[in-house]
Length: 633
Image 1 (spheres, rainbow, N blue to C red):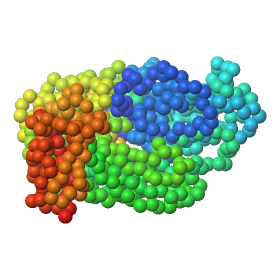
Image 2 (spheres, helix red, strand yellow):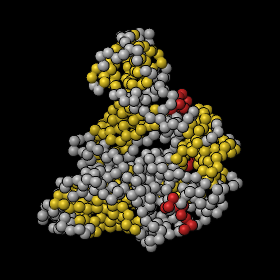
Image 3 (cartoon, one colour):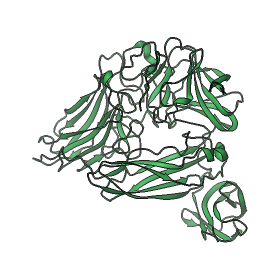
Protein backbone atom coordinates (compact mmCIF):
# COMPACT_ATOMS: atom_id res chain seq x y z
CA UNK A 1 0.00 0.00 0.00
CA UNK A 2 1.46 3.32 -1.01
CA UNK A 3 0.32 6.31 1.01
CA UNK A 4 0.04 9.52 -0.95
CA UNK A 5 1.96 12.54 0.14
CA UNK A 6 -0.44 15.38 0.88
CA UNK A 7 -0.31 19.13 0.80
CA UNK A 8 0.77 21.26 3.76
CA UNK A 9 -0.86 20.09 6.95
CA UNK A 10 -1.38 16.48 5.83
CA UNK A 11 1.22 14.33 7.54
CA UNK A 12 1.45 10.57 7.82
CA UNK A 13 2.50 10.02 11.40
CA UNK A 14 4.71 6.93 11.68
CA UNK A 15 8.11 6.15 13.07
CA UNK A 16 9.21 8.87 15.47
CA UNK A 17 5.76 10.52 15.36
CA UNK A 18 7.45 13.91 15.27
CA UNK A 19 4.41 15.71 13.88
CA UNK A 20 4.23 19.46 14.46
CA UNK A 21 1.05 21.49 13.84
CA UNK A 22 -0.50 18.42 12.23
CA UNK A 23 -4.14 18.36 11.21
CA UNK A 24 -4.91 14.90 9.80
CA UNK A 25 -2.72 12.13 11.25
CA UNK A 26 -2.32 8.37 11.46
CA UNK A 27 -0.62 6.87 14.51
CA UNK A 28 0.18 3.29 15.60
CA UNK A 29 -2.57 1.43 17.43
CA UNK A 30 -3.29 -1.25 20.01
CA UNK A 31 -4.46 -4.37 18.13
CA UNK A 32 -8.05 -5.55 18.44
CA UNK A 33 -7.76 -8.65 20.63
CA UNK A 34 -10.32 -10.68 22.55
CA UNK A 35 -8.96 -9.99 26.03
CA UNK A 36 -6.05 -7.62 26.40
CA UNK A 37 -5.61 -8.57 30.03
CA UNK A 38 -5.03 -12.25 29.31
CA UNK A 39 -3.18 -12.33 26.02
CA UNK A 40 0.21 -11.41 27.48
CA UNK A 41 1.31 -12.92 30.76
CA UNK A 42 4.80 -13.60 32.06
CA UNK A 43 4.49 -17.36 31.65
CA UNK A 44 1.76 -19.91 31.14
CA UNK A 45 0.71 -22.01 34.10
CA UNK A 46 1.89 -25.37 32.78
CA UNK A 47 5.32 -25.64 31.15
CA UNK A 48 5.30 -28.34 28.43
CA UNK A 49 7.58 -31.36 28.62
CA UNK A 50 10.87 -31.34 26.76
CA UNK A 51 10.24 -31.41 23.03
CA UNK A 52 11.99 -33.57 20.48
CA UNK A 53 13.10 -32.26 17.09
CA UNK A 54 11.93 -31.03 14.71
CA UNK A 55 10.67 -27.83 16.33
CA UNK A 56 8.42 -26.01 13.87
CA UNK A 57 5.77 -23.33 14.24
CA UNK A 58 4.39 -21.03 11.56
CA UNK A 59 1.70 -19.48 13.81
CA UNK A 60 -1.11 -20.72 11.57
CA UNK A 61 -3.08 -22.45 14.31
CA UNK A 62 -6.22 -20.84 15.67
CA UNK A 63 -6.01 -18.41 18.54
CA UNK A 64 -4.43 -15.13 19.59
CA UNK A 65 -1.79 -16.70 21.83
CA UNK A 66 1.39 -18.66 21.05
CA UNK A 67 0.74 -22.40 20.94
CA UNK A 68 1.45 -23.73 24.48
CA UNK A 69 3.06 -26.89 23.12
CA UNK A 70 5.96 -24.82 21.78
CA UNK A 71 6.06 -21.58 23.76
CA UNK A 72 6.01 -20.93 27.51
CA UNK A 73 4.93 -17.27 27.56
CA UNK A 74 2.11 -15.28 26.02
CA UNK A 75 3.63 -11.93 25.14
CA UNK A 76 3.51 -12.32 21.35
CA UNK A 77 0.31 -11.49 19.46
CA UNK A 78 -0.66 -14.18 16.92
CA UNK A 79 -2.50 -12.58 14.01
CA UNK A 80 -3.04 -12.42 10.28
CA UNK A 81 -3.81 -8.72 9.95
CA UNK A 82 -0.53 -6.87 10.54
CA UNK A 83 1.35 -8.09 7.47
CA UNK A 84 0.98 -8.44 3.73
CA UNK A 85 1.90 -11.75 2.05
CA UNK A 86 3.43 -13.60 5.02
CA UNK A 87 5.24 -16.87 4.39
CA UNK A 88 2.24 -18.79 5.71
CA UNK A 89 -1.09 -17.91 7.24
CA UNK A 90 -0.40 -16.12 10.55
CA UNK A 91 2.57 -14.41 12.22
CA UNK A 92 3.76 -13.71 15.76
CA UNK A 93 4.00 -9.97 16.41
CA UNK A 94 6.23 -8.41 19.07
CA UNK A 95 5.23 -4.86 19.98
CA UNK A 96 5.10 -2.47 22.94
CA UNK A 97 2.04 -3.66 24.90
CA UNK A 98 2.14 -4.80 28.52
CA UNK A 99 0.09 -7.57 30.17
CA UNK A 100 -3.11 -5.52 30.55
CA UNK A 101 -3.06 -4.05 27.05
CA UNK A 102 -1.46 -0.81 28.19
CA UNK A 103 1.88 0.35 26.85
CA UNK A 104 4.70 -1.27 28.78
CA UNK A 105 7.20 1.58 28.56
CA UNK A 106 7.63 5.18 29.57
CA UNK A 107 8.33 8.31 27.59
CA UNK A 108 10.84 9.30 30.25
CA UNK A 109 13.16 6.45 29.28
CA UNK A 110 16.00 7.90 27.20
CA UNK A 111 16.20 5.36 24.40
CA UNK A 112 14.36 2.05 24.49
CA UNK A 113 12.94 -0.48 26.93
CA UNK A 114 12.77 -4.26 27.03
CA UNK A 115 9.33 -5.17 25.74
CA UNK A 116 8.00 -8.54 24.46
CA UNK A 117 9.31 -12.12 24.57
CA UNK A 118 8.55 -15.31 22.66
CA UNK A 119 10.25 -18.12 24.61
CA UNK A 120 10.45 -21.72 23.46
CA UNK A 121 9.70 -24.75 25.60
CA UNK A 122 12.59 -26.99 26.65
CA UNK A 123 13.99 -28.85 23.65
CA UNK A 124 16.03 -32.04 23.51
CA UNK A 125 19.30 -31.15 21.76
CA UNK A 126 21.25 -34.09 23.15
CA UNK A 127 23.33 -34.43 19.99
CA UNK A 128 26.94 -33.92 21.12
CA UNK A 129 29.33 -33.01 18.33
CA UNK A 130 26.73 -32.39 15.64
CA UNK A 131 27.39 -29.41 13.36
CA UNK A 132 24.19 -29.56 11.28
CA UNK A 133 21.61 -28.16 13.72
CA UNK A 134 20.21 -24.83 12.58
CA UNK A 135 17.50 -22.48 13.77
CA UNK A 136 15.82 -20.50 10.99
CA UNK A 137 12.98 -18.01 10.85
CA UNK A 138 11.56 -15.18 8.78
CA UNK A 139 11.10 -11.69 10.18
CA UNK A 140 9.59 -8.43 8.98
CA UNK A 141 9.61 -4.99 10.54
CA UNK A 142 6.57 -2.70 10.37
CA UNK A 143 4.25 -4.61 8.02
CA UNK A 144 0.97 -2.72 8.30
CA UNK A 145 1.90 -1.47 11.75
CA UNK A 146 4.62 0.90 12.97
CA UNK A 147 8.25 0.79 11.87
CA UNK A 148 10.87 0.30 14.61
CA UNK A 149 13.39 3.15 14.78
CA UNK A 150 17.17 2.95 14.91
CA UNK A 151 17.13 2.70 18.72
CA UNK A 152 14.72 -0.30 18.60
CA UNK A 153 15.85 -3.87 18.06
CA UNK A 154 14.91 -7.53 17.67
CA UNK A 155 17.11 -10.21 19.30
CA UNK A 156 17.47 -13.98 19.41
CA UNK A 157 18.86 -15.46 22.62
CA UNK A 158 19.92 -18.99 23.57
CA UNK A 159 19.82 -20.58 27.02
CA UNK A 160 22.14 -23.49 27.78
CA UNK A 161 20.53 -26.15 30.03
CA UNK A 162 23.26 -25.72 32.67
CA UNK A 163 23.06 -21.93 32.75
CA UNK A 164 20.66 -19.22 33.89
CA UNK A 165 22.08 -16.55 31.58
CA UNK A 166 20.53 -15.90 28.19
CA UNK A 167 23.10 -15.32 25.42
CA UNK A 168 22.40 -13.02 22.47
CA UNK A 169 23.26 -14.86 19.23
CA UNK A 170 21.62 -12.58 16.66
CA UNK A 171 20.13 -9.08 16.53
CA UNK A 172 18.93 -6.39 14.16
CA UNK A 173 17.91 -2.78 14.63
CA UNK A 174 15.18 -0.56 13.26
CA UNK A 175 15.42 2.08 10.59
CA UNK A 176 15.97 5.76 10.14
CA UNK A 177 12.77 7.53 9.09
CA UNK A 178 14.19 8.20 5.62
CA UNK A 179 14.93 4.52 4.92
CA UNK A 180 11.71 2.70 5.85
CA UNK A 181 11.51 -0.90 4.56
CA UNK A 182 8.85 -2.23 2.25
CA UNK A 183 5.87 -3.30 4.33
CA UNK A 184 5.70 -6.81 2.83
CA UNK A 185 9.40 -7.72 2.91
CA UNK A 186 10.20 -10.86 4.96
CA UNK A 187 13.86 -11.77 5.47
CA UNK A 188 15.10 -15.24 6.40
CA UNK A 189 17.72 -15.80 9.09
CA UNK A 190 19.79 -18.94 9.78
CA UNK A 191 21.57 -19.43 13.12
CA UNK A 192 23.77 -22.50 13.78
CA UNK A 193 23.41 -24.31 17.10
CA UNK A 194 26.71 -26.18 17.48
CA UNK A 195 28.35 -25.16 20.77
CA UNK A 196 28.54 -28.08 23.17
CA UNK A 197 26.93 -26.13 26.02
CA UNK A 198 23.73 -25.93 23.96
CA UNK A 199 23.74 -29.53 22.66
CA UNK A 200 21.97 -31.01 25.65
CA UNK A 201 18.48 -31.87 26.78
CA UNK A 202 16.69 -28.74 27.99
CA UNK A 203 17.94 -26.19 25.44
CA UNK A 204 15.77 -23.09 24.96
CA UNK A 205 15.73 -20.07 22.67
CA UNK A 206 13.69 -16.90 22.62
CA UNK A 207 12.93 -13.78 20.62
CA UNK A 208 12.98 -10.41 22.38
CA UNK A 209 12.41 -6.85 21.25
CA UNK A 210 13.28 -3.40 22.55
CA UNK A 211 10.82 -0.56 21.85
CA UNK A 212 10.66 3.17 22.45
CA UNK A 213 8.02 5.88 22.81
CA UNK A 214 8.24 9.45 21.52
CA UNK A 215 9.19 11.99 24.17
CA UNK A 216 6.76 14.73 23.15
CA UNK A 217 4.31 16.03 25.75
CA UNK A 218 2.31 17.84 23.07
CA UNK A 219 1.42 14.54 21.41
CA UNK A 220 0.19 12.45 24.32
CA UNK A 221 -2.89 11.41 22.37
CA UNK A 222 -0.54 9.77 19.83
CA UNK A 223 1.25 7.51 22.33
CA UNK A 224 -0.02 4.07 21.42
CA UNK A 225 1.33 0.70 20.33
CA UNK A 226 4.58 1.01 18.34
CA UNK A 227 7.64 -0.76 16.91
CA UNK A 228 6.24 -3.93 15.32
CA UNK A 229 8.35 -6.98 14.50
CA UNK A 230 6.66 -9.97 12.84
CA UNK A 231 7.97 -13.57 12.97
CA UNK A 232 7.06 -16.52 10.74
CA UNK A 233 8.20 -20.07 9.98
CA UNK A 234 10.37 -20.79 13.03
CA UNK A 235 12.21 -24.06 12.35
CA UNK A 236 14.86 -25.94 14.38
CA UNK A 237 16.15 -29.36 13.30
CA UNK A 238 19.11 -31.55 12.46
CA UNK A 239 20.46 -32.28 8.95
CA UNK A 240 20.08 -28.65 7.95
CA UNK A 241 22.29 -25.91 6.58
CA UNK A 242 21.94 -22.30 5.56
CA UNK A 243 21.79 -23.51 1.95
CA UNK A 244 18.65 -25.62 2.48
CA UNK A 245 15.97 -23.00 2.15
CA UNK A 246 12.87 -25.04 1.39
CA UNK A 247 10.28 -26.64 3.64
CA UNK A 248 7.99 -29.33 2.26
CA UNK A 249 4.80 -27.35 2.56
CA UNK A 250 2.01 -25.81 0.48
CA UNK A 251 0.12 -23.36 2.65
CA UNK A 252 -2.52 -20.66 2.69
CA UNK A 253 -1.11 -17.19 3.29
CA UNK A 254 -4.07 -14.83 3.78
CA UNK A 255 -7.52 -14.67 5.28
CA UNK A 256 -10.70 -14.83 3.25
CA UNK A 257 -12.24 -11.53 2.23
CA UNK A 258 -15.85 -10.44 2.51
CA UNK A 259 -18.49 -11.97 0.27
CA UNK A 260 -19.77 -8.44 -0.24
CA UNK A 261 -18.40 -5.97 -2.78
CA UNK A 262 -18.51 -2.84 -0.63
CA UNK A 263 -19.07 -3.90 2.97
CA UNK A 264 -17.48 -6.28 5.42
CA UNK A 265 -20.87 -6.67 7.07
CA UNK A 266 -24.40 -5.36 6.63
CA UNK A 267 -27.83 -5.88 8.26
CA UNK A 268 -29.53 -9.10 7.24
CA UNK A 269 -32.87 -7.27 6.94
CA UNK A 270 -31.28 -4.99 4.30
CA UNK A 271 -29.70 -7.79 2.29
CA UNK A 272 -32.81 -8.81 0.35
CA UNK A 273 -33.71 -8.15 -2.34
CA UNK A 274 -31.61 -5.22 -3.65
CA UNK A 275 -28.29 -5.84 -1.91
CA UNK A 276 -28.49 -9.55 -2.71
CA UNK A 277 -28.36 -8.66 -6.40
CA UNK A 278 -25.87 -5.78 -6.17
CA UNK A 279 -23.55 -6.53 -3.25
CA UNK A 280 -22.61 -10.19 -3.60
CA UNK A 281 -19.24 -10.90 -5.16
CA UNK A 282 -19.15 -13.50 -7.89
CA UNK A 283 -16.05 -15.25 -6.53
CA UNK A 284 -14.39 -16.20 -3.24
CA UNK A 285 -10.63 -15.65 -3.57
CA UNK A 286 -7.86 -17.57 -1.82
CA UNK A 287 -4.07 -17.13 -1.88
CA UNK A 288 -1.59 -19.94 -1.25
CA UNK A 289 2.11 -20.59 -1.76
CA UNK A 290 4.36 -23.55 -2.51
CA UNK A 291 7.28 -23.16 -0.08
CA UNK A 292 9.04 -26.21 -1.48
CA UNK A 293 11.79 -26.38 -4.14
CA UNK A 294 9.87 -28.85 -6.27
CA UNK A 295 6.57 -28.69 -8.14
CA UNK A 296 3.66 -29.58 -5.86
CA UNK A 297 0.02 -30.41 -6.55
CA UNK A 298 -2.90 -28.88 -4.64
CA UNK A 299 -6.67 -29.33 -4.80
CA UNK A 300 -8.81 -26.34 -3.77
CA UNK A 301 -12.09 -26.80 -1.84
CA UNK A 302 -14.65 -24.18 -0.77
CA UNK A 303 -17.40 -24.84 1.77
CA UNK A 304 -20.09 -22.36 2.88
CA UNK A 305 -22.21 -23.22 5.93
CA UNK A 306 -25.28 -21.47 7.28
CA UNK A 307 -24.59 -21.63 11.01
CA UNK A 308 -28.21 -20.92 11.90
CA UNK A 309 -29.67 -23.63 9.68
CA UNK A 310 -26.57 -25.84 9.90
CA UNK A 311 -26.46 -26.81 6.25
CA UNK A 312 -23.65 -26.29 3.77
CA UNK A 313 -22.60 -26.48 0.14
CA UNK A 314 -19.13 -27.46 -1.09
CA UNK A 315 -17.32 -26.60 -4.31
CA UNK A 316 -14.31 -28.44 -5.72
CA UNK A 317 -12.00 -25.95 -7.40
CA UNK A 318 -9.94 -28.64 -9.07
CA UNK A 319 -6.25 -29.47 -8.71
CA UNK A 320 -3.25 -27.64 -10.08
CA UNK A 321 0.52 -27.96 -10.11
CA UNK A 322 2.22 -25.14 -8.23
CA UNK A 323 5.78 -24.20 -9.11
CA UNK A 324 8.48 -23.85 -6.43
CA UNK A 325 8.06 -20.66 -4.33
CA UNK A 326 5.07 -19.69 -6.46
CA UNK A 327 2.28 -17.59 -4.95
CA UNK A 328 -1.11 -18.42 -6.46
CA UNK A 329 -4.53 -16.81 -6.24
CA UNK A 330 -7.62 -18.81 -7.13
CA UNK A 331 -11.12 -17.39 -7.54
CA UNK A 332 -13.89 -19.79 -6.56
CA UNK A 333 -17.08 -19.17 -8.54
CA UNK A 334 -20.03 -19.97 -6.31
CA UNK A 335 -23.81 -19.84 -6.40
CA UNK A 336 -24.83 -20.22 -2.78
CA UNK A 337 -28.55 -19.79 -1.90
CA UNK A 338 -28.71 -17.15 0.82
CA UNK A 339 -32.19 -17.78 2.20
CA UNK A 340 -33.99 -14.92 4.02
CA UNK A 341 -35.60 -17.16 6.63
CA UNK A 342 -34.84 -14.85 9.59
CA UNK A 343 -35.56 -11.11 9.49
CA UNK A 344 -33.02 -10.22 12.18
CA UNK A 345 -29.60 -11.77 11.59
CA UNK A 346 -27.58 -14.50 9.94
CA UNK A 347 -24.03 -15.80 9.97
CA UNK A 348 -22.26 -17.97 7.42
CA UNK A 349 -19.01 -19.86 7.82
CA UNK A 350 -16.91 -19.62 4.67
CA UNK A 351 -14.11 -22.19 4.67
CA UNK A 352 -11.50 -22.96 2.06
CA UNK A 353 -8.85 -25.65 2.34
CA UNK A 354 -6.17 -27.35 0.29
CA UNK A 355 -5.75 -31.07 -0.28
CA UNK A 356 -2.02 -31.75 -0.60
CA UNK A 357 0.44 -34.53 0.12
CA UNK A 358 0.65 -36.13 3.56
CA UNK A 359 4.09 -34.64 4.20
CA UNK A 360 2.62 -31.12 4.38
CA UNK A 361 1.71 -29.38 7.62
CA UNK A 362 -2.07 -29.59 7.89
CA UNK A 363 -2.81 -26.72 10.25
CA UNK A 364 -1.93 -24.04 7.67
CA UNK A 365 -3.97 -25.35 4.73
CA UNK A 366 -7.35 -23.99 5.88
CA UNK A 367 -8.80 -20.48 6.12
CA UNK A 368 -12.15 -19.63 7.68
CA UNK A 369 -14.25 -16.48 7.63
CA UNK A 370 -17.52 -15.79 9.39
CA UNK A 371 -19.65 -13.60 7.15
CA UNK A 372 -21.92 -11.72 9.53
CA UNK A 373 -25.27 -10.16 8.75
CA UNK A 374 -26.16 -8.47 12.02
CA UNK A 375 -27.64 -5.02 12.67
CA UNK A 376 -24.85 -2.76 11.42
CA UNK A 377 -22.95 -1.68 8.33
CA UNK A 378 -19.15 -1.92 8.42
CA UNK A 379 -16.28 -1.32 6.03
CA UNK A 380 -13.59 -2.45 8.50
CA UNK A 381 -12.48 -5.99 9.34
CA UNK A 382 -12.25 -5.36 13.10
CA UNK A 383 -8.47 -4.92 13.19
CA UNK A 384 -7.02 -1.45 13.86
CA UNK A 385 -3.49 -1.37 12.51
CA UNK A 386 -3.19 2.37 13.22
CA UNK A 387 -5.27 5.20 14.66
CA UNK A 388 -6.79 8.19 12.86
CA UNK A 389 -7.61 11.67 14.06
CA UNK A 390 -7.41 15.43 13.65
CA UNK A 391 -4.87 17.14 15.87
CA UNK A 392 -3.24 20.51 16.39
CA UNK A 393 -4.07 24.14 15.75
CA UNK A 394 -7.37 24.82 14.04
CA UNK A 395 -8.95 21.45 14.85
CA UNK A 396 -10.80 22.33 18.10
CA UNK A 397 -14.20 22.19 16.37
CA UNK A 398 -13.27 20.10 13.34
CA UNK A 399 -15.53 17.31 12.05
CA UNK A 400 -15.03 13.85 10.54
CA UNK A 401 -17.84 12.26 8.50
CA UNK A 402 -18.05 8.67 7.20
CA UNK A 403 -20.29 7.85 4.25
CA UNK A 404 -22.66 4.86 4.20
CA UNK A 405 -25.33 3.75 1.76
CA UNK A 406 -28.28 1.87 3.20
CA UNK A 407 -30.19 -0.51 0.96
CA UNK A 408 -33.37 -0.05 2.98
CA UNK A 409 -35.01 2.97 4.61
CA UNK A 410 -34.56 2.35 8.30
CA UNK A 411 -33.99 3.83 11.75
CA UNK A 412 -30.43 4.78 12.70
CA UNK A 413 -30.21 3.70 16.34
CA UNK A 414 -26.60 4.51 17.16
CA UNK A 415 -22.95 4.24 16.16
CA UNK A 416 -20.25 1.79 17.26
CA UNK A 417 -16.77 3.32 17.70
CA UNK A 418 -13.44 1.59 18.09
CA UNK A 419 -11.03 3.76 20.11
CA UNK A 420 -7.31 3.10 20.41
CA UNK A 421 -5.91 3.05 23.90
CA UNK A 422 -3.05 5.50 24.46
CA UNK A 423 -0.48 5.87 27.22
CA UNK A 424 -2.50 6.74 30.31
CA UNK A 425 -5.68 6.70 28.17
CA UNK A 426 -5.03 10.34 27.42
CA UNK A 427 -7.62 10.57 24.66
CA UNK A 428 -10.52 11.30 27.00
CA UNK A 429 -11.79 14.62 25.66
CA UNK A 430 -15.51 15.06 25.08
CA UNK A 431 -16.77 15.03 21.50
CA UNK A 432 -20.10 15.27 19.71
CA UNK A 433 -21.64 12.28 17.92
CA UNK A 434 -23.00 13.54 14.59
CA UNK A 435 -25.14 12.53 11.60
CA UNK A 436 -25.26 14.37 8.25
CA UNK A 437 -27.35 13.91 5.14
CA UNK A 438 -25.88 13.80 1.64
CA UNK A 439 -25.37 16.78 -0.64
CA UNK A 440 -25.76 15.40 -4.19
CA UNK A 441 -24.33 18.58 -5.73
CA UNK A 442 -20.95 18.45 -3.97
CA UNK A 443 -21.10 14.67 -3.37
CA UNK A 444 -20.04 15.48 0.20
CA UNK A 445 -21.71 15.59 3.61
CA UNK A 446 -24.63 18.01 3.64
CA UNK A 447 -26.80 19.28 6.47
CA UNK A 448 -26.10 18.26 10.06
CA UNK A 449 -29.32 16.46 11.01
CA UNK A 450 -28.45 15.26 14.51
CA UNK A 451 -25.70 15.72 17.10
CA UNK A 452 -25.25 14.36 20.63
CA UNK A 453 -22.97 16.27 22.99
CA UNK A 454 -21.22 15.18 26.18
CA UNK A 455 -19.76 12.00 24.66
CA UNK A 456 -16.26 10.74 25.35
CA UNK A 457 -14.22 7.62 24.45
CA UNK A 458 -14.76 4.42 26.39
CA UNK A 459 -12.38 1.48 26.15
CA UNK A 460 -13.60 -2.11 26.13
CA UNK A 461 -11.82 -5.42 26.75
CA UNK A 462 -14.31 -8.04 25.56
CA UNK A 463 -14.28 -9.83 22.21
CA UNK A 464 -15.69 -6.94 20.23
CA UNK A 465 -14.00 -3.88 21.62
CA UNK A 466 -16.30 -1.38 19.95
CA UNK A 467 -18.21 1.05 22.15
CA UNK A 468 -21.87 1.67 21.32
CA UNK A 469 -23.36 5.18 21.46
CA UNK A 470 -27.15 5.31 21.09
CA UNK A 471 -29.32 8.14 19.83
CA UNK A 472 -32.13 9.26 22.13
CA UNK A 473 -34.38 10.38 19.26
CA UNK A 474 -35.61 8.67 16.12
CA UNK A 475 -33.42 9.23 13.04
CA UNK A 476 -34.71 7.86 9.75
CA UNK A 477 -32.09 7.39 7.02
CA UNK A 478 -32.25 6.21 3.43
CA UNK A 479 -29.79 5.92 0.58
CA UNK A 480 -26.58 7.88 1.44
CA UNK A 481 -25.93 9.29 4.93
CA UNK A 482 -22.90 10.10 7.11
CA UNK A 483 -21.96 9.37 10.72
CA UNK A 484 -18.94 10.74 12.57
CA UNK A 485 -17.84 13.17 15.23
CA UNK A 486 -17.29 16.85 15.99
CA UNK A 487 -14.33 17.73 18.19
CA UNK A 488 -14.34 20.04 21.21
CA UNK A 489 -10.56 20.37 21.73
CA UNK A 490 -7.41 20.35 19.60
CA UNK A 491 -6.34 16.97 21.00
CA UNK A 492 -6.56 13.86 18.86
CA UNK A 493 -9.53 11.50 19.40
CA UNK A 494 -7.57 8.45 18.08
CA UNK A 495 -10.20 6.31 16.32
CA UNK A 496 -9.25 2.89 14.93
CA UNK A 497 -8.10 2.74 11.30
CA UNK A 498 -8.11 -0.49 9.27
CA UNK A 499 -5.36 -0.56 6.64
CA UNK A 500 -6.54 -3.84 5.13
CA UNK A 501 -9.64 -2.32 3.47
CA UNK A 502 -9.46 0.89 1.49
CA UNK A 503 -12.53 3.17 1.67
CA UNK A 504 -10.65 6.42 1.37
CA UNK A 505 -13.31 7.96 -0.90
CA UNK A 506 -15.94 7.70 1.86
CA UNK A 507 -14.05 9.57 4.61
CA UNK A 508 -14.25 13.37 4.90
CA UNK A 509 -13.07 16.01 7.37
CA UNK A 510 -13.96 19.65 7.84
CA UNK A 511 -11.83 22.26 9.61
CA UNK A 512 -14.58 24.86 9.51
CA UNK A 513 -15.04 25.90 5.88
CA UNK A 514 -15.58 22.92 3.61
CA UNK A 515 -15.32 19.15 3.43
CA UNK A 516 -12.12 17.48 2.20
CA UNK A 517 -11.56 13.85 1.32
CA UNK A 518 -8.93 12.15 3.49
CA UNK A 519 -5.47 11.66 2.03
CA UNK A 520 -5.01 8.25 3.68
CA UNK A 521 -5.93 4.81 2.36
CA UNK A 522 -7.93 2.64 4.73
CA UNK A 523 -11.19 2.44 6.65
CA UNK A 524 -12.42 4.11 9.82
CA UNK A 525 -13.70 1.75 12.48
CA UNK A 526 -17.18 3.24 12.85
CA UNK A 527 -20.34 1.20 12.37
CA UNK A 528 -23.88 2.63 12.14
CA UNK A 529 -26.49 0.53 13.95
CA UNK A 530 -29.80 0.04 12.18
CA UNK A 531 -33.22 -1.34 13.01
CA UNK A 532 -35.78 -1.46 15.81
CA UNK A 533 -33.47 -2.05 18.76
CA UNK A 534 -29.81 -2.39 19.71
CA UNK A 535 -29.18 -6.08 20.24
CA UNK A 536 -26.20 -8.29 19.43
CA UNK A 537 -27.69 -11.26 17.55
CA UNK A 538 -26.44 -14.75 18.21
CA UNK A 539 -27.35 -18.06 16.69
CA UNK A 540 -30.96 -19.11 16.38
CA UNK A 541 -32.59 -19.43 19.82
CA UNK A 542 -32.92 -22.82 21.43
CA UNK A 543 -34.91 -23.98 24.42
CA UNK A 544 -32.78 -23.34 27.55
CA UNK A 545 -31.40 -26.49 29.10
CA UNK A 546 -32.49 -28.72 26.20
CA UNK A 547 -30.01 -30.94 24.32
CA UNK A 548 -29.07 -30.34 20.69
CA UNK A 549 -31.39 -31.88 18.10
CA UNK A 550 -30.41 -33.46 14.79
CA UNK A 551 -32.83 -33.68 11.88
CA UNK A 552 -32.79 -36.42 9.23
CA UNK A 553 -34.98 -35.88 6.14
CA UNK A 554 -35.66 -38.81 3.80
CA UNK A 555 -35.89 -39.65 0.99
CA UNK A 556 -33.69 -36.83 -0.22
CA UNK A 557 -34.16 -35.95 -3.07
CA UNK A 558 -37.89 -36.46 -2.57
CA UNK A 559 -40.71 -36.78 -5.07
CA UNK A 560 -44.18 -36.16 -3.71
CA UNK A 561 -43.59 -36.88 -0.02
CA UNK A 562 -40.92 -36.99 2.68
CA UNK A 563 -40.38 -38.21 6.24
CA UNK A 564 -38.34 -36.80 9.09
CA UNK A 565 -36.55 -38.32 12.05
CA UNK A 566 -35.32 -36.36 15.06
CA UNK A 567 -32.38 -37.46 17.18
CA UNK A 568 -31.62 -36.39 20.74
CA UNK A 569 -27.93 -36.92 21.60
CA UNK A 570 -27.72 -39.27 18.56
CA UNK A 571 -30.67 -41.44 19.79
CA UNK A 572 -33.94 -41.39 17.83
CA UNK A 573 -36.83 -39.52 19.44
CA UNK A 574 -39.53 -42.17 19.01
CA UNK A 575 -42.56 -40.26 20.23
CA UNK A 576 -42.15 -36.46 20.18
CA UNK A 577 -45.26 -34.75 21.54
CA UNK A 578 -47.18 -33.74 18.37
CA UNK A 579 -48.75 -30.80 20.15
CA UNK A 580 -45.30 -29.21 20.70
CA UNK A 581 -43.57 -29.76 17.37
CA UNK A 582 -44.15 -28.32 13.90
CA UNK A 583 -42.54 -28.85 10.50
CA UNK A 584 -42.11 -25.89 8.13
CA UNK A 585 -40.83 -25.84 4.56
CA UNK A 586 -39.30 -22.68 2.99
CA UNK A 587 -38.33 -21.96 -0.59
CA UNK A 588 -35.11 -20.15 -1.52
CA UNK A 589 -36.85 -16.79 -1.32
CA UNK A 590 -37.61 -17.42 2.34
CA UNK A 591 -41.35 -17.94 1.77
CA UNK A 592 -43.16 -20.48 3.92
CA UNK A 593 -44.68 -22.96 1.44
CA UNK A 594 -45.65 -25.85 3.75
CA UNK A 595 -46.43 -26.21 7.45
CA UNK A 596 -47.66 -29.22 9.36
CA UNK A 597 -47.68 -31.01 12.66
CA UNK A 598 -44.73 -33.33 13.17
CA UNK A 599 -46.99 -36.37 13.39
CA UNK A 600 -48.52 -35.81 9.94
CA UNK A 601 -46.22 -38.23 8.12
CA UNK A 602 -45.56 -38.67 5.37
CA UNK A 603 -45.47 -34.98 4.52
CA UNK A 604 -47.07 -34.54 1.10
CA UNK A 605 -45.41 -32.00 -1.23
CA UNK A 606 -46.73 -33.06 -4.62
CA UNK A 607 -48.02 -29.57 -5.37
CA UNK A 608 -44.62 -27.91 -4.91
CA UNK A 609 -42.26 -27.29 -7.85
CA UNK A 610 -38.89 -29.00 -8.12
CA UNK A 611 -35.94 -27.31 -6.44
CA UNK A 612 -34.09 -26.79 -3.16
CA UNK A 613 -36.04 -26.16 0.06
CA UNK A 614 -35.29 -25.75 3.74
CA UNK A 615 -37.02 -27.93 6.33
CA UNK A 616 -37.23 -26.20 9.71
CA UNK A 617 -38.49 -27.88 12.90
CA UNK A 618 -39.80 -25.84 15.85
CA UNK A 619 -40.79 -26.83 19.37
CA UNK A 620 -43.30 -24.52 21.03
CA UNK A 621 -42.49 -21.96 18.34
CA UNK A 622 -38.73 -22.02 19.00
CA UNK A 623 -36.21 -23.21 16.43
CA UNK A 624 -34.71 -26.66 17.13
CA UNK A 625 -33.27 -28.07 13.90
CA UNK A 626 -33.17 -27.70 10.11
CA UNK A 627 -32.01 -29.44 6.96
CA UNK A 628 -32.02 -29.09 3.18
CA UNK A 629 -34.52 -30.95 1.02
CA UNK A 630 -34.29 -31.35 -2.73
CA UNK A 631 -37.52 -32.01 -4.60
CA UNK A 632 -36.86 -33.83 -7.90
CA UNK A 633 -39.24 -35.93 -9.97
